[in-house]
Image (cartoon, rainbow, N blue to C red; front, side, top):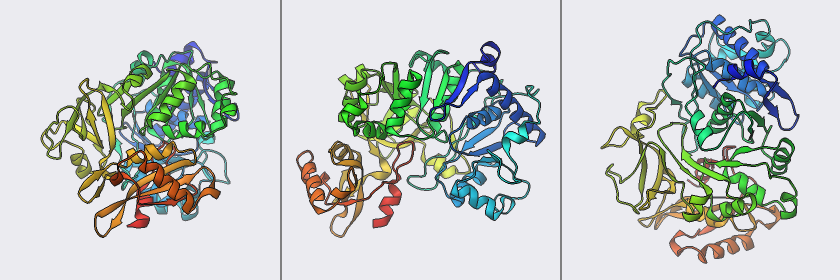
Length: 510
C-alpha cells in the first residue's frame, strides 16, 4: 500500500493527471522522483523529525515532494498560495522547516526572493523553485543529479498542516511520527477502501488546492492504493464537470461552496455533462445547507458521503446519503473516537442539548509551539477528550448535528445566536452567491446580526435587495435571528477549502 509497490507492479499506470493540461505522471516516475528527493534531503542533512515546507500551486511535483518527505521521515508543511510573505514566513519558522520549495509568480514568493531568503528565513536555509528562473536553485534540476535508489534508512514521515487562521494565528497540527517503515499503509487507507470503495481502478478528482489537508491526504491515500489522481489546476464549476466527463471520474471530494457554485449554473448547462461514472462524492470542511444537499442528491443520486473531523485526527463522524435523507442536517455518527457534548464546565450533556463537541480516543495531537492552544482544546474535566471548537448536539441515536463554531456565536441581549443557521437560509436565495453572518456592535444589546452578501449579479446590490433578503429571513426565522442590516461585497474572503475568513469581515465593523 505504497506508490513504490505500484511502481514495481504497474510502472506505466497513471499516478497523477492534471485536469487542464492532461500532463501525466506514471507510478514509475513518481517513484524515481520521490527517491531522488529523499536522497537530496539526506545529502542536505535532513534526518527523521526534520521539516520542509511546500509553497506551490497544484502540480504533479507537489505530490512527488510530499512522497519524498514521507519516505524520509520528515514533517512536510503545505502553505496556502494566497498568503503574504509575512504570513508564510510565520508558518515556515513556526513549523521548524529548514527547506522550502516554492512557485515563482506567487506574490509572497517573489517578495521572498526580492528580500533575500537568508534575510527572511535565516542563514543556511535551503530554498528551491519548482521551475527554472534565472540562476535560482530549481528543484527538478537539482534532484536530477541524485540517485533514484531508495535511501537506506527509510521511515514514515507525516504531514503537518496549519489551520486556516480564520479566527486568529494559524495553528500547526503536529501528530507524532510512527517510527514505522515508509511503506506501511497510511492511516486512512482502510477507510477509503471500505467506506468509499477506492481501488487501483479508481479515478479520484481533487478540485481543491493540495495545500489543504483533506485534498492532500486523500490524494496520497489514493496513490497508496494505486488509483489515479486527477488534479484540477483550480476549481471552476464548468471545468470540474468537464473533467468528470473526460476522465470518467469515479471518486471526488468537494466542499459545500462548490455544490452551491455548481447549482448556480443554468440547469441545462450543468446537466449537459455526463457524470454517470461517479460512484462516490465525499464532502466535508464546512456545513452543507440542507436544501443544497437535497438538490445534489437529486442530481447525482445517493452517492454523497459526508464526514466531520479535522486535521488533528482526534475523531470523525460519517454519514451516507441514505442515512442523511432520514436525518437531514446531520454529519453522522462517530466513526473514529467517541463523541461527547459538554457544557462550558466540561460536563457531558444529555441528547438534544447543545454544547461543545468533544472526541475521545483519537490521535493525541498537539499544536506546534503553542501549549495554551493545545490545553484549550482539551476538556477541563476529561483531559483526554479534545475539541475542534464546534457547537452541536446528539440525537437519541447518536447522530451529530452541528450548530456553529463557538468563536462565531453572536450574543445579542443575552441570547445566543448561531450564524450558520442564518447563512443556510440566505444561501439558497436565488440572488445570493455567498453570504457571511456575524455580530457587530450594538449599544443596547451588545451585538446585533449583520449579513454580508455576495450577490449572483453585482448590479442587484443595493437597498432593494437588502430589504428583500431581510424580509426573506423574517419569513423563515424568528425575529431575534434575522439580520438587522445587509451589506454587499463582490467577493467574500473564502478559503479554497470552503472555510470563510470571517475574522477579516468582522474586523471591519469592530
